[in-house]
Image 1 (cartoon, rainbow, N blue to C red):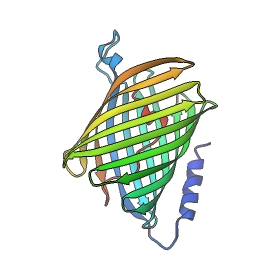
Image 2: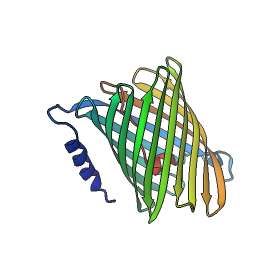
Image 3: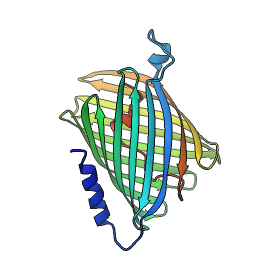
Image 4: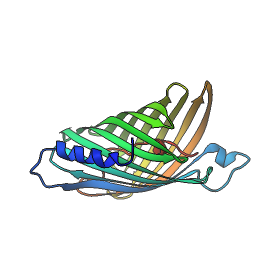
Length: 244
């Protein structure tokens, strides 16, 4: 896929939505996060810098009461390899009811001077005290194809305190597999501002040889709009990597 296909997909989504309704801004969020591997903290080359810095934003617009479009944009800096990368994403969202949404998404990224394209389907469901979100996608990087799976669950411990569990897995034709598992805590300073922390592990398997790394991530996010944020999480390989 080429970057211009984002525009083509946006047009297709707009045409598919029923007409005669004004476009309304649903909500969005902006965030800043820092992550690093355990080796960066205690290894021989330990430093005070983070392995990855991410500045991200999501913006959702409702075309009808049942159909919406979400746009994602992210900027990443990877300290180990001294690289800056950009990720763009687009979601088409259909609401089955107030608590349930399904969608399709497309992301385009650049990783180490090569394009990464991912196309997939997603769903989310809100309950009284917890939310669940899942996605299934297919990605292409340097001619290799991958199947991508993701699952995120968030539980409200207290009115201002939330616990989350996330799992992401990418399988590149069986030759390379990447898995990320993390447990996070969010604290709502206000209805819009949240502080977050995550502790997790990544496992990489390349041609039968595997290695795992513990990582930490801290961040802050600010949500805005009528619904205080966008419906779906951001997708893409760069979003799943705590560092390079």
